[in-house]
Length: 546
Image (cartoon, rainbow, N blue to C red; front, side):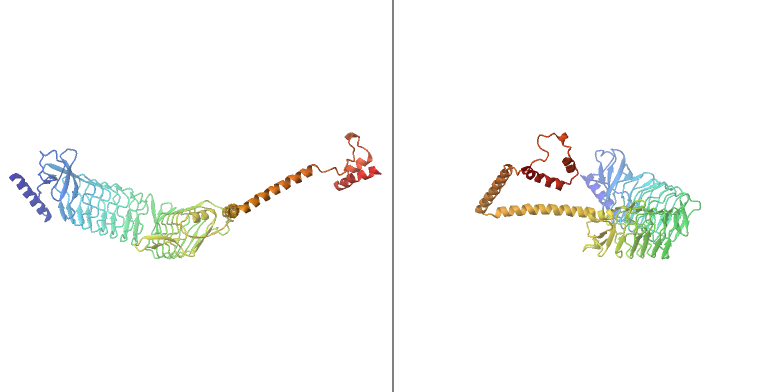
């Protein structure tokens, strides 16, 4: 009894010490109120008042599975009463909004951490990762909005997706030299990030790695970094100092604009440039996803003949763009390519006005391609357009009382096109204006058939109504009238069958063989007109009487 009381007292003292942030070995309190010793082998989960631990497969290793939400400073010990702390479970510290600092053991024992380990720890400012931790898991520090500094260990080789997503106070990304793999959205929306150091061992970035890093001013692409991922600098409004190592195998910088080495792909046009017009060089066949994203100073961009693809979001949020001419060579306008270009008034497809036979390669226009272009009132499409995606033309959005975006049709907009445009209009759940550029055979046939069916239905309906409205006497009279008509028809048919001979006789005679009729009279009849034959046939009885 005394022994249990002492243990409870020590547990209370340990909790108090941790609460005031003194790094001391805490006494243990199990989930059943008993202290944990190596002899308690049947116990798999226990806590120290701050952290909860789980024994791994009946071994001498434990995993941290949770932390109390009110903790402010936590010191993770390498060992605890004979157990070695080797890992941190998924989301173990997630949502601990009061947590300001965490000290992790650097003795080589802690080797793994689960996804979103410290996600949404919005008060956490600094952390040092141990050398034994080789992988930064998915979302490990996502939405840690106060995080200012992260010190990596000497063995980190991989950083998972969203690891530092929306760490809005983080100013520097000094990636370790041992890093060889980097996931998607790693520094996504880190709005205070100013500089990034890319180690030589990293050959590829994940997609959208630095999207929304509006404070990023400089970025160097070393020769070892062969792939930047999709839209790496989307929304990097302050990026003015972009450099590429000479002789780079993939990328080339021309007048501050990032191209492929053969200049067939335009990857990135810095949105901070003050130019109002730009001519895409001849030879470019692909404008990459997000290449001109949020270039608000641009008013006109000249696209070259030979261009094939306009990438997703390529000109999205170019709010100053007023006109664009799409060359006949373009075969793909991808999703949101010109979305949110609120000043865009004129879109011209070269050859559309004169095209009647669908000349050129088929053109696919994907979802939301010209979405929320509120100033665009008319678009004339060429016949070669084979597919139009959802909300591509004539659609914008309004906010409801809760701030949610509600799609709506642009008032006064008119889309002029052929079969693909007609299909787009019929499938769209908004009332977008449309004028066909071909005779609407499908529509005409549909309405003609519908009218025919309606007429038949009305005809039978009228007959049925009339029949149902007649009195019994009227029905009987109708029946008798029908019978009288039937009887009269039968009598007329009988009279026709018994009608006497009118005296007409064949002028050839009945017994004379056909081959003997070769006198002059018969020869004359063969060349006579039918009316004359008829008259001569009726005059034969009179001549016989004479």
